[in-house]
Image (cartoon, rainbow, N blue to C red; front, side, top):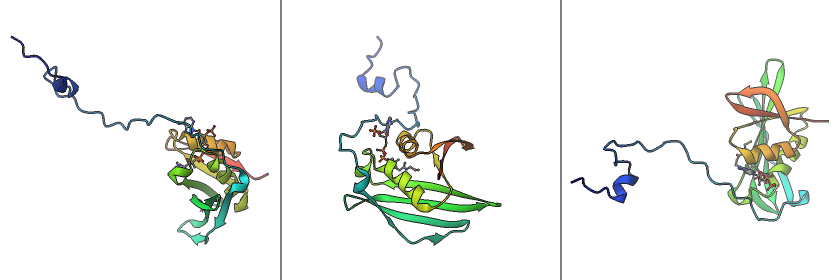
Length: 157
Ligand SMILES: CC(C)(COP(=O)(O)OP(=O)(O)OC[C@H]1O[C@@H](n2cnc3c(N)ncnc32)[C@H](O)[C@@H]1OP(=O)(O)O)[C@@H](O)C(=O)NCCC(=O)NCCS
């Protein structure tokens, strides 16, 4: 008589006698929209840090404050590429400060404060929050593609 399969052996993929390998692909976290109040422009401050010199150029840096408390940081890396200067923005907010509109304000304000004619945002295709925030801040798609990442561009007008 055939031995009955236990729930545990079925769940572990041993029912057919072959061991299935667990998927190594990272599971996408379900998206839950924040219920927190939207940030106003006046609630967000960018505090300039020291501009540092890098191998390729320079780095502009600001601390982000929301209602006077630390909410993250933003930097813009400027690198010379031949006779052109590339400026790339990177915004990092604390977990608790995400999803309430602060990122949108930060992308826009840092780009304006930089005084640069153009700023690029290179964003992973799966990073929806960053894409939405950058687009709302005035970044538009550029033809440039970097290893499957999206490159958005902001132009000072
Ligand atoms: C990316 C980041 C800067 C965006 O800032 P933020 O303040 O969280 O973004 P905002 O709230 O301004 O806008 C995000 C929007 O995307 C929405 N959103 C986020 N994830 C989403 C998803 N998976 N699907 C659909 N909408 C999504 C949010 O609901 C919000 O829209 P809403 O205002 O209509 O609710 C911030 O989340 C962060 O620091 N993340 C970690 C670091 C990172 O990825 N940096 C980007 C490198 S450039």
